[in-house]
Length: 287
Ligand code: SAM
Image (cartoon, rainbow, N blue to C red; front, top):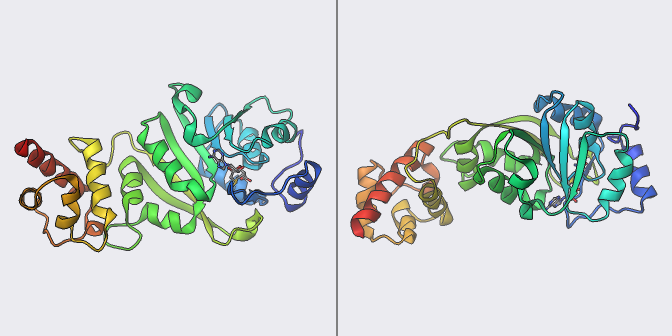
């Protein structure tokens, strides 16, 4: 290896000091300082030489280095304008890494990654984890796998079954598009600075076809969002926000064989799919 391993407290502190950097809380900067965690992420993603990887937020290059050492071709999008110059030095010698300055939420990912399959691997900034995951899933990109560090609480939401407090629109979106698995937990001590919360690495293998068949994906997610928007309301009341009369909603629920007093958080993906179909029919009938 040409460069020292970045994933250690000593090397990370030295890099921050050399470049006069201070971790930005606003940008969710908690740098990994634990080589075992970097290895764990690379192993979970089953990186093999030639894998194309989109990394979100390379920071000072800690995880990027692990990916590059495993032979991945990495494209890393980083919002902090100070970091590309730092990365040019910490990752000097790796010709399989390209750093792209910018905000991942404003990046044209199809233009950046092209049409060949790729993996997403990241230690995500926690302040925008959900928007990033939803953007990656909804764009129908040729992503095969998403392996990301998230807060433990978000990991629980991603894998939550129907019925509990953790089950919500994020659970449905993640489970509709992928097979999510919590790979391992990560202690706050593995980061500099330490975040206030525990973290987990999520391994989401993207499904070739979504978990359930829906006639209209846009309407499916509208139904899901409406169902979770007002958790204290019964489903029948919540769904009226889709612009249907009480009668039409009740009829749609009866046709889908769903009790109108149920709450959104108790519906399985299959039930949301059935409801999407009958609500779609109710809309057509009321036109
Ligand atoms: N990958 C590094 C590591 O594991 O040590 C840094 C991870 S740190 C938790 C999150 C990184 O995401 C930071 O480098 C931060 O500047 C960057 N970031 C924050 N918001 C971003 C955005 N909207 N687009 C791209 N990068 C972002």
